[in-house]
Length: 446
Ligand code: GDP
View 1 (tube, rainbow, N blue to C red):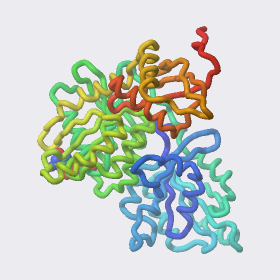
View 2: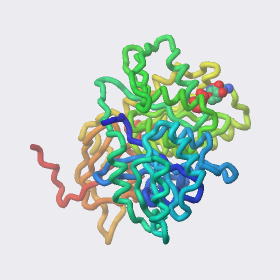
View 3: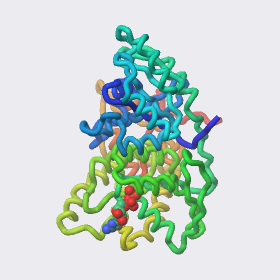
View 4: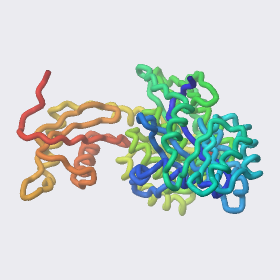
């Protein structure tokens, strides 16, 4: 069975009006609205995440969202092709209400060239005479086939089963002792590939490629002053930089795929453009996934006084979102600041992997509670009995309290911020787990 070292990607393709986005919404379901609950991030209609029975997750792309109205005769353009080439499975959707069209035959012919496994989804099976029409699609020669109604939600068990059979298995990452994994992420054209080349070209950097296959990410292993790093999916960064016009929605998905396999993200932002909603979306994804972030402000050579002011104004939101991350102003064009990147990664990773003694942690928490009074509920104050760090990378703290605090509680934010600041966890997401406990007694030791 095929296997890949990341979550598989499924693209929904086909002519306009066959029901691609209805299928997308049905597959992504309600989860979608929770995924993007981040400041500055709008809900994405192109890209989603879902799970098959048994908990296997997958990335899902509605290629219909990558088209402009005038160019959708077959539902294919250069952006859709990029998405197809990055996918592990295509759901080729056809319309049983209309029956087979010349367009479907053309799409089938084109898709075959991509050499990506295909599943034919015969949609709108609920309408009258649909079953008769459904037989016409055998001409396309695409197997296997699934009949369903995206609108009414029937036939989805079959679809899930087939997808499960056709998707490659996921190999868990094998962490190498002492190796830090770095993802270079950012919107299209911000200079990721150029920065990658500069980093690999540094004199004190020793480079060795890591083998992979076409659909598997190909990494590059580097040694800098005796420390080991793995730059993830370097082949993909270069490939996508050569293709002009990568859609931003696709770039966000690519970033998530890279982040899956990384400890720390180098988030590349364009100085003259300032921090954009797309940058915040990628930063938010990294943060939610528990990855540390270093921000590179690239194209510093192109900054003028006006765009400089705008950059600093827009920077504030990113700075807040990422708990004051390490920021390096760079120019891949002039080599400015490139030498400061690995040191910034090291500082950030120290925080990401830091372990704090139980005594110190409890002192910080007690002090935080003293300085700002905890919320009360029916006259009873919120109390912490005991705090302890349960893991690092990212640092995760367990607090035993007289009751749990909701995720949204601002006091939770206050505690996280206090810990972040006191422990100098710059660009490092922390996790607070709050458990209820009745009395003031430390957990039993085994
Ligand atoms: P990617 O899509 O993020 O990998 O971006 P690329 O590395 O392909 O760069 C996009 C474009 O920006 C190319 O034309 C680069 O030559 C240019 N570029 C990258 N970094 C800089 C920089 O620091 N200054 C200037 N002036 N141009 C840059």
